[in-house]
Image (cartoon, rainbow, N blue to C red; front, side, top):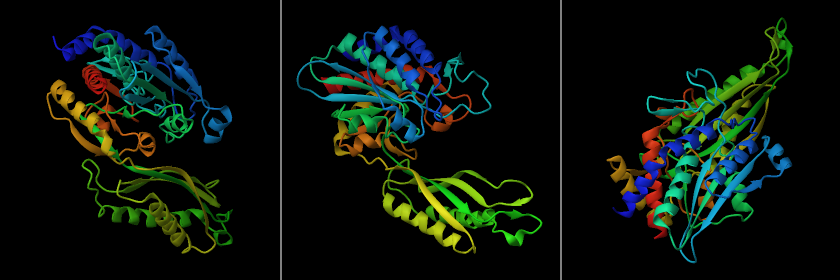
Length: 408
């Protein structure tokens, strides 16, 4: 039996245990907002200790978390050193996730299994990779027994807000500096690049007035409509800008939230909306933000009495491939192709992630883990999020084999 077959056999023999571990992780909510995620880190550390894995708990200072708009963050690092020399490979997954929302047919915190899938909020993104990475590490130590290099598990809790207090905080504090890293992803592709994201809050100010005498006021909603129309016109232009990265099409803009006014019979004096602008890797974030601000300002200027405040909420740079990621891509494509029975493409994704922060620190990384071909199939950020258990099993094997290659 080859070492690869022995790794696979160990994972098969312990797969029921891996599934139970994932169920326990799903049963502790990590809705962000509000972002009270320290309890999940504590529970994860307890479960890891049962496997003989000691997790360092790195609590982000309470005031920093509060200023950021969240409630509590404790990031975890598990360090496993196998000898002098060799690479340090980090495996990162995030525990924070958007709230469940409506329309579930399974308990979002139940970890229920039906039709070969495990259901629950974060079952796919990305508590499944808490499980795949943990059990890949356990299989590596039980079977391959590396004599050099090291592996680190990074379990963090700030991806939904951009990662600054997750991986960004660990890197900035000098708590880790791996040579290579793999971040939570899906099983049928290895992602080497992703979009950037700019999020802004736009407040349109007018002047309230009684609806019976509207000329005494300035309608903030009419001003906002002009601004929104200008932004949507810009969105149409983005379709003509194409990325050279496979898997990424063109930039786009979404207005995801809008609120304003005080009552039906009152001319609205203020309207607030939030926009999300996805940036392809070829774009310059500074230029993108400047253009958006100009579009808004020019449209606002068309309405007498309208003023605008613009607040940047998030600026996440795109992830660009670093040359040093080749050993990761090669190993994942080799083992993924064998275990899934089809080619594993190296490509980009229109999502943005906190993996970019490792890249910005000069650490080559890729995105790979347990999940289906598309975000849509996983129901991530929708009701009935799920991970197919066979994908979880095979992805765990791919990661274990990849670690074995990298530490050989």
